[in-house]
Length: 373
Ligand code: PHE
Picture (cartoon, rainbow, N blue to C red):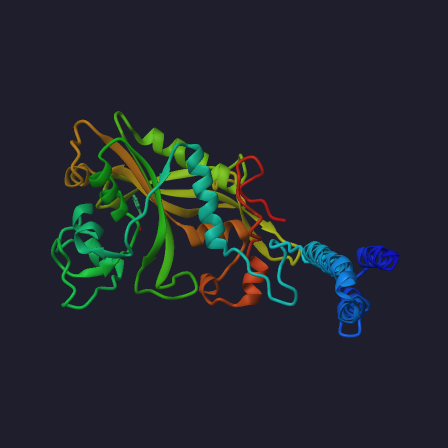
């Protein structure tokens, strides 16, 4: 009797102190294994008289159960502790680059589009989109370029084959500008409108400053009593925020686009500054008329043509508006200093590493739309 209690006390304290699963297994063998001490006690039952057995049997069985229960409890505790320490050791910072892997970066075009969305959101503009595979009618006809219009020839359009007839006549094409989004937005939402529409556009053209695919951002404002002053203020505010300079000076020149009347070509003043390499660089800011300065063509714009408003389902006697279109790649080149447009689309990791942005560089008006770590 004393034996059993002592054995149980001994087993409970040693099992409770077992430091790992291997030590616990050794204790299981020591007590409950074939040669184990509890097993040895069980074997004595066979040699007992029935009276002794009736007295000792339940005690020995209870001992075995108590030892088994202690082993199970300790095993569970050790396994939980092992899991806890594994979880603590394996915490993973998913924002860190994978070791030894090249780090991804945000392409300057994406970065600039995010910057533009941030700036225009602050001015109350929503972002609109349209299809890159476009109907001839939206890309040309509704923008006041009917079938025989000479301006169509200037667009170097990629047309689909004859078996891709456009629902509204003509053939399907790759949109040559983001202006069809103007028409789609007015037809879908009516007026007033305040949107920008960034996206890819396509023209069959290729050299250091032209690629067959490039990016534009379209702006459209439709409301009552909109005039050229609104256009000029909006462009000035946008370009000052984008280039992060207060001294941006714009020059508006009369121009021609079929879908705006009057049409305005916008130039921005720059100065030639000598870099450390002694080479002259164009730095935006100031009037282009100063000595050592010049004007650079930046974007096309104008008041939305009455005919476009009509074809977009609006009454031009009630609604007026302005529109502009600007090359996003060109804005990126001017702001971040690249000189060959073709490199934008080569996917060369060295270029991307140099000119790309960290995913943490979220453009915000408070931190600056050109923040760069
Ligand atoms: N769509 C014109 C282009 O691609 C730019 C533009 C847009 C001009 C809006 C005026 C108004 O050249």
